[in-house]
Image 1: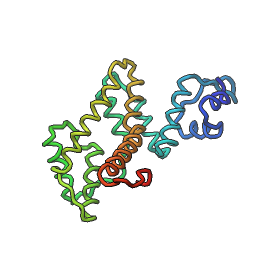
Image 2 (image 1 turned 45 degrees about the vertical axis):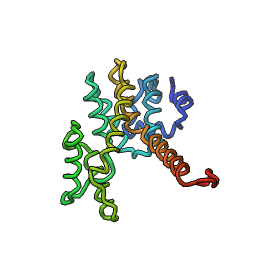
Image 3 (image 1 turned 90 degrees about the vertical axis):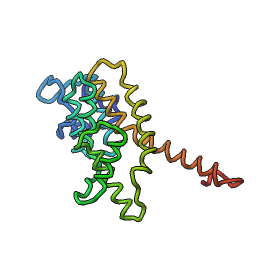
Length: 212
């Protein structure tokens, strides 16, 4: 297909497609002439993924390039694919080196018996969050986090169940990316709605629940 058709089918403007090509997010097409190239279904698939990462998840171009770079190194090892995908997603800020929270996170992981790499960004993200809560006067320790971690285990089982039976390694990588990056806002939205429902159940009484 020509770029105009790629634009029509993907919903991404020609100008934006050219920008993604210049930034190395989208592979170049097969050159038909000095000024024309042909694109295929793989380009359409990649373009939709780029659009989701940048437009839906709000990743920067540089972060998106990292994520796509991880996908480019896909392998038949599903655990390796997940590691590449998670490793490419930079979680906001790193914890302060002199704060006690990393030790609290380490203790939590040990108590759970989880196999988590020492350099996993999520370790630092959790430690940083705990440090922020401590600064605000709302410290949390691993005893409070433990039931949340158990719920996270159940979510992880559901996540990985969705990868079972997929033999194509690139499809596994893309599905892993969708589960780790794009599904998170949906899970957060479900949590917010569940909180509203529980608040209404406990406190609303005869009040208009739509206002909660």
